[in-house]
Image 1 (tube, helix red, strand yellow):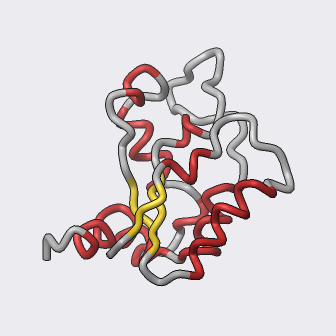
Image 2 (cartoon, rainbow, N blue to C red; image 1 turned 180 degrees about the vertical axis):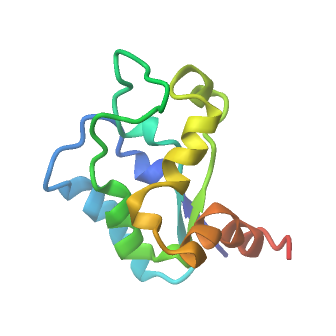
Image 3 (cartoon, one colour; image 1 turned 135 degrees about the vertical axis):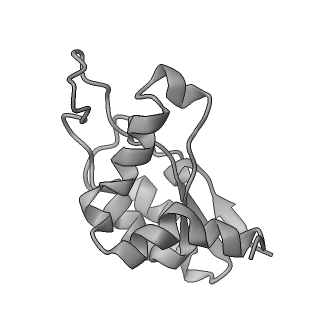
Length: 125
């Protein structure tokens, strides 16, 4: 049975290095039936006080990278966090914040995280 850890294990805004509690949660990655869901980066980064034309967070902690190292792209999936995302960074910015994140430079990895993993887990293919 697949087990999906939601919202980057609930780490939230304000997580500080060395992210010990978060790393403990990521330890479940040792089980091959576990997956982790990545929502909008607004869950882990404070919204800038002034919204610029090209939206970006001032600081994004390396939590996505840590999840990537633990689970790999084939056990990660994006989730929009709708409707809360509407009041935070907005759906489009949530989507592009993850799609354009430096940790997802590889197109194949991006395809897994942004859809292929969910298709496989929920047996849509």
